[in-house]
Image (tube, rainbow, N blue to C red; front, side):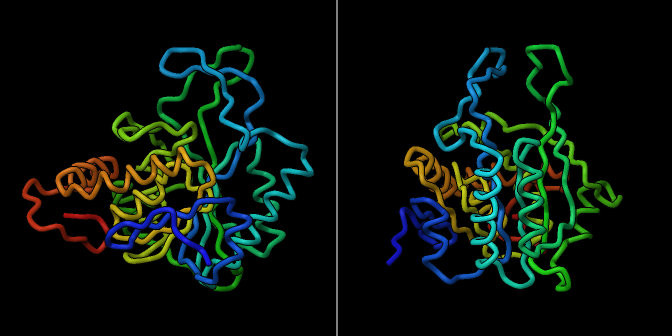
Length: 289
């Protein structure tokens, strides 16, 4: 029987410890949305710039590259398992760079998904290019796909239009990388910014929806889910990252800090946030006011 590594007091946030490929087959629950940030297989002893310092790009054993055949098999395996855990009207988001995103796209199509969009996340503060021999890397991609080609999915068109100043939101998102305040409980080498996950969650789920992240890392998906009134299950095999995830979730049990973080999210999304917060209530978009 599965046992959780951690479960929040209100049961909106659960963590499982282990390999998602082994754990996903051990339960039958189905989710409204899945966000996955799988290994990019970038840990090849290269170097990059971070906060003005030269650093190694190696993230850990879990990110070391393999052959093309290995990467393709890996993506087909975990995406296939995730498909079984998705509701018929559910959608999946998968992030990546050119190192893995084409393999992911092929796997999604082989498994019967319909690709809806390929979001280009254009980072407003990318690290510089050390070699000066090619263009600076400043983007990542997020594929959005629904489970069935002929079954409709949920999309909050009006909210995305509101966030985009009254115009239809395009598939190019100009967002900064992770902010310093998001690392208050520790650092994860590939941590995604809350503003990216909040937008994804608000675009494709309704309040109280269940969200799965099979590569939870430090659980940015789960924090974004909690702050927007959704429910989360994360799977992670690295104990250090699980510890950070638990600390991050317990941090926002402090209602004052939760309101501060929620205001930051509203500011990032350009949604008006009243000065007098009053009671902790969720609006129609799943954001507190």
